[in-house]
Image 1 (cartoon, rainbow, N blue to C red):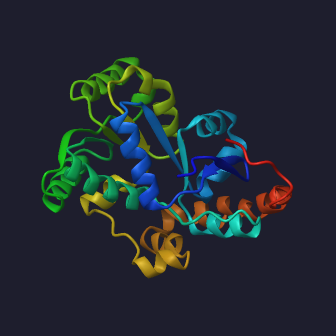
Image 2 (cartoon, one colour; image 1 turned 60 degrees about the vertical axis):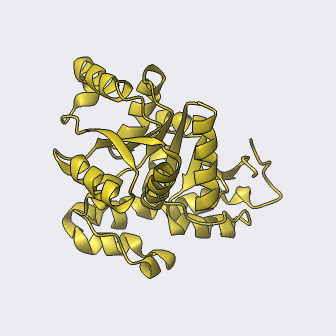
Image 3 (tube, rainbow, N blue to C red; image 1 turned 120 degrees about the vertical axis):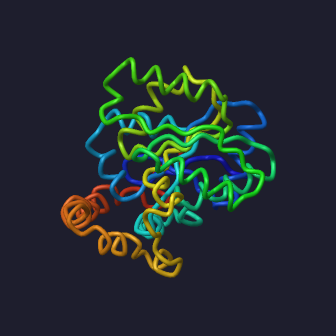
Length: 258
């Protein structure tokens, strides 16, 4: 499996399928290697463009995955096509399946009070043998409170999970992982965004065919138009400018970086 990264706009991404990604994570766990994984969609890519710290954290990630069909299309435009979109939600389900089969343990961090517990119940029912050994819904602003940060680190370390689904939203989850993961007894940290709400059944995912044609964002917008209008119709429009800015990345003009 080729684990090299290739340039995609302001960062570098791994060109892996969902199955290859799960295989790599399984290898991290078997080797007892601590690792973290960042998912990049249009919103995250635009944040990376303007946030040097988030760019540094993303560049240092063990795996950087493309979580958005528009970015898959951009990679093709640059003649460096990634194999497929690997969303945090799809990857989380695949990791639940793998964990149930191999005896790996999981911890769910994030979501409103009770949501992670519901996600745990749903996933353990769906994947017999899965061990979600802990959940935590930290209070708003916990990342600025050292006492609360210590509580979260202790809660995770107490059960020493193989996989931590970190569902705090971008850039909070990436920055929390960067600042805290070395002090936690856990193997693999996945930046999973809103996945906890999908797993809990509080938010319905778009049908697979909608995702395949790159319209999952519009499906989500229809569900939450007030919250998502600015993100999708104003902020994310910056993508077109970035496509032009990074046009030099077309294959043959930029070296592939490990």
